[in-house]
Each structure stands twice: as C-alpha cells, then as structure tokens.
Length: 487
Image (tube, rainbow, N blue to C red):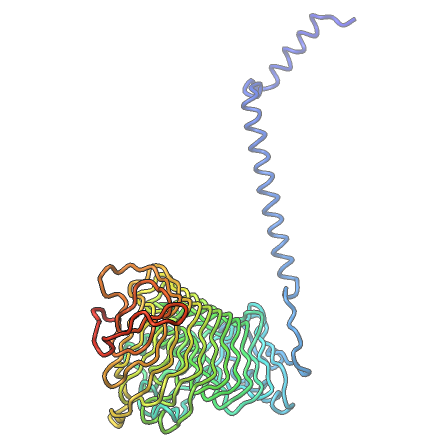
C-alpha cells in the first residue's frame, strides 16, 4: 500500500515544476487560443502559396474555342505579350496569312500586346482570350493618316487627313471580334491631354472603325480608353454588338462616345454596359452639306438592354451629325444612371435630313439631370459652306414606359419656328423629380399628344387623350415657348 505522505510529497513537486500561471483555467484557454490561431495562419499561408503555384503551372482556366476551321495564335508570329514589345508586324503577318488562306481565326493569348494600328480582313475572327489585352501605342507618329470621311468634309476636329483607328477595316465581309472578355485598350490619356493643349494636327482616331463593311459581329470584349469615339461602324450593314463593356473616364476624356453607328443599316446593340466621357450611343449620318451629298441614312437600328452612364452628355443620342437621315429606330429596356441627360436628339439649321419613326420604351432614369432632350440649335458646322436653309425634319417620336427617380427636368422638347417637333407621343410616364419650379416639363414649337396619365404633368403644348383614345384636352399653345432651364 502506497505511503500517503509520499504521494502528497510528489504532488507538491509537480506543482513546483508547472509554472503557477498555467494553473489558472482562463490563462490556459488564452494560450490554447493563441496557439490555434498561429496554426491556422500558417496553414492558410501554405494553402495560398500552393494555390498560386498551381495556378502558375496550370493552363488557362477557359480554353479558346475553335470558331473557324483554320486557327492561328498571335505568338506563333513572333509576338511578345510583355506590354513593351511592339507587335504590329506580328498582327500584320497573322492577318496576311488569314487573308491568303481565305479566312481564319486569330487568337490573342493572355498577355499585354502593344501595337500600332492594324487592319482586319474578311472572313476573320479576332479572339481575345481571358486576360488578353491589346494595347494601342500612345505615340501618334505610329498612327497612319487616312482621308477625311466623305460625309464629314474633313477631319472632325482638324482640316485635312485624320488619324486611323487602332483596329481598322474597309470593304470587309464576315468579321467577328469576340473572346472571353479580353480587353482592347486605346491608352487614350495622352491623346486627351494633347487634344486639350491643341498639340494634335489631325483629328483623333477611334478605337475600332469598320467602313463600308457588312456582316459584323462584336461580343464579349471590353473596350476602354479610346483616343476618340470607341466603336465607329461607318456605312455598314448587318452589324451586331452584344455583351460588350465600354469604359472611359467620366470626365476629362473628350469625345469618347461608346458606340457611334454612322450611316448604318440593320444593326443591333444589346446586353452591354457603357460608362464613358461623352454619349453612350450616338446615331449619326453625316455632317451638313457633306452628309446631305453622301446621302446614306442610319436606319433599322435596335438598341436594347443597356446600362449606360454619361456625366458629360447623354445615355443615347441621335445626332447632331444626322444630315443623311435617321429613321426606324427602337430604343428599349435601358437603365441610364448618374448622367447629365438620358435621351437626347440634337440637330440644327444647316443639317437637312430627317429624324423620324423613333420608338423609346421601357426606360429607367436614375439621378439624371434632364431625362429627355430634343434640341434644334446645336450649331456646330464643318465650315462656312453649309446651307442655313437646309432644315431637318423631326417627326413621329414616341416615349412609352418611362420611369425615373432623382430627375431634375423630365423633358425639354425644344423645337423652333424653323424646326418644329411634330407628332410626338408620351404614354405611361412616371418620373420622380428634384426640381421644384413650375415648368419642369418644358416644350416649345411641339405638336403631339399625351395618352393617359403621366407624371409630372405635361406641358400645355400637347393634346391629352385618355387611355381609350378619347380627346380630353386639345392644346392651344403649340408654338409658344415654355422654357426656363438650359438642358
């Protein structure tokens, strides 16, 4: 049998060996928590390092699909995607080979591919892989000079030749630009600064311009920081632009329109996000006497399912260069937010042409200064040779299903004695306003109607019908000014 005295003596020895501060349960729990925390941190760090090593060894997460029978990789032509090497020759060699073969696909792999402007060819797919970036060189001496656009008379900003676009094409058929949301970056900042300082001798070039071409499909690519207009299809037919992102700074990025269909027919722009330093979309068709002579309208264009922001101009515009005519336009299912204007039609004496058969429906305006603007005194002209008696016609415009919050002026329809706005319709319009003065729905020289109830109350220049088509009030003030705000 054990000696009780010896057992008690051993217990006292153990207590001497264990520091007294560990005898506290609270202190013991704190120590265990600290040790556990250190183990977790070490485990997470090891796991992250292993994941990074795995990603570096693994192939791209999204394989590039084969969209045409013949496929080339840009790197096969000597290109280096380090953001420093100039790869213009590689693009030119690859596209030349596609031309010789009668068509093909050019894959731009992950990397930063610096290049001067280059030309596409027919029956071609340009595919930008995930994390692929085409960088436009920001030295204008690398950018070729092209003749002025025939419907503009001369370079839009300077007389004489104009800079070409970073990606260009003329007289093409069957061109696809797509990818896994790779990026085409125009590196426009130096262009914008030189433009403001008047250091450029020629009109800036767009990021992408296709001229006199047809069967164009552009999707799943990000376009950013264009020197000038971003996407400029000129006198093209059968164009689809879908699921693209277009970005530029909201200020100090002059004339960085998102998409400018110019004398285009049969076009769809849809399912895209645009946040730029000028108009999100601007439909055009030539400038004054040059556009009248060129006589190519923009027509049969549908714009839908867009999110647009423009703090300088408008979400969607028509004009001001519309001298060849604009007709049969549908704009629907748009969210325009944090913008100066939502919808704008702009023209002036000297433009000639027409804007007719335009449908706007299901528009949402959030924090927009002026919701709807029609302006008929946008007096910018290419030269003194324009005809001030060439008056545009604006007619058959409808707005249905307009919603909004935080809108200062819901509508400013500014016709004139020379250019009245005819046959305009408002229906199902409810817009929350922030401007408390009396005349917040402003009109002058307007003929048209309101169907059903709308908010805020319309100007008295418009006839008022109930939902069944019965006339409730006929306007007696169609040719009076009712404006107190410069939109």
